[in-house]
Length: 284
Ligand code: PEP
Ligand code: MN
Image (cartoon, rainbow, N blue to C red; front, side, top):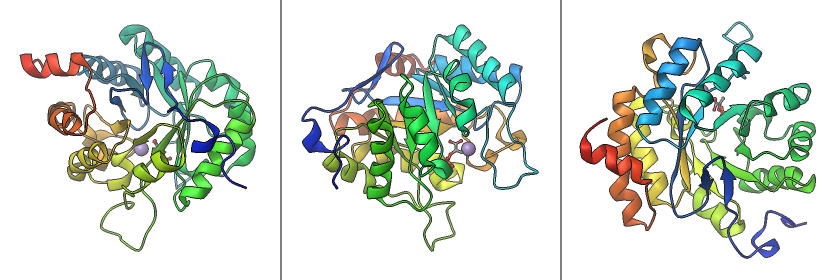
């Protein structure tokens, strides 16, 4: 069948996606950061303001959380979306948040600048079609055990409905290895670049499952040609309601932002001036 819309043959030039004042897939790296979930107002606004100072381009945070256990924190739902809206007002940064249910697509799209399709929903074809009908960029995570072909076909589902603003996101796949939460498939980055015109970013947090491995995986992703990173940052990871073990503190994140500059430059990518300036002044 081939990739009729997502494939390289469909479009020669790279797809560059505009989100608010920034673009994904251009010369500059896109850094998206924030806690796994929106947990409470004060904590989220505090984290968002810190991240803004560190020069991130977008904020993340789940209001609807796909948890393995039905007894685990499921997210604040609409209250979480309202907190995200406040964070956007305070920082001016666009919001990336997950939509899990077709019934919530319009509601979430009313708050989000980018609709995230989580790993577990990558082959929820009805949901893919639904976000395909919305005029908002979609961050499409790779399924837990999805091949590159299945992942690109999921993008095709969205595009076939008319929405071609798709950011592919590699977040690790399930393998026999248990040391890490998932195995980061770095080869997915050049593979998507080879097969498709769509931008591809990497989420090293869900791949590693361990905060100490996030920085090296993030740097490897940039070196491999990723257009950006999605990173979990929490003001106090040990108190996080989900994914605390893989969350960076704001301090760790600031260090990472500094470390990625030479890696990005070595492969011809630019970092936003604000990041460089902050690092130079050691404000962070
Ligand atoms: C997330 O980004 O919060 C998330 C749940 O990730 P994934 O779908 O990749 O597991
Ligand atoms: Mn998470």
